[in-house]
Length: 290
Image 1 (tube, rainbow, N blue to C red):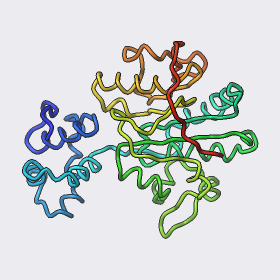
Image 2 (cartoon, one colour; image 1 turned 120 degrees about the vertical axis):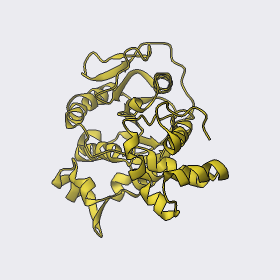
Image 3 (cartoon, rainbow, N blue to C red; image 1 turned 120 degrees about the horizontal axis):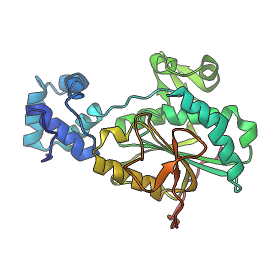
Image 4 (cartoon, rainbow, N blue to C red; image 1 turned 60 degrees about the horizontal axis):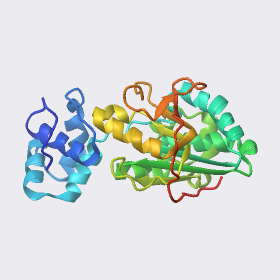
């Protein structure tokens, strides 16, 4: 079990939040700890634990790795929605993607959605590309979407979303065009699912990203980390970006004071550009065709 749980939390909450930090780097602050019992309630019921104290005691004694993984999945914040922060997606559609279309002479575009949760961000991008298929005809579009949560990635790969999920940000026209009813839920079309590679990955022990990416998303991820870990993630993003790359963070996140590798983008408000530097080409490349 971890040895450095967040200060201020007590008892079982302190142990379980320490487990979350050890596995993912995320800090479960006192302000977020109120949701712990609610998040763990289905797991407590399934394993017949009376409360989180019984769960923490069992983990301390048994070192049950599978149960530890289930606890981590339950505690992760998998909040997401289609076209989240619509103003950002409008900027991507109207300005960033046309800029990259003109800039990438090899007609190849690589996108990485880091901390993708259940995949709505990646599917929103895929919808934008398919709705503008004429512009991107003949291009090779590669979308990599990664998250540490095995449960979130499993849902993202299935492409199945509840009625509540699709009502959050998804236009009715796009729902009817790109999703099919599956019982009470909706599933992204095979065409959309085929555009995206979803992979479970840890930003502090990354295996999935390869080469350089032209557009990088890491939105509402850094805010859960310590300053030291935020800097480590930004160094990772820098290693997989080039001087023409565009980085998008969440509205409450910034590179200022966190990284010397990125600067505010001169053309796209709220986004960041790779600071010019001599960059070594990473090996390998992931393929996905539009």
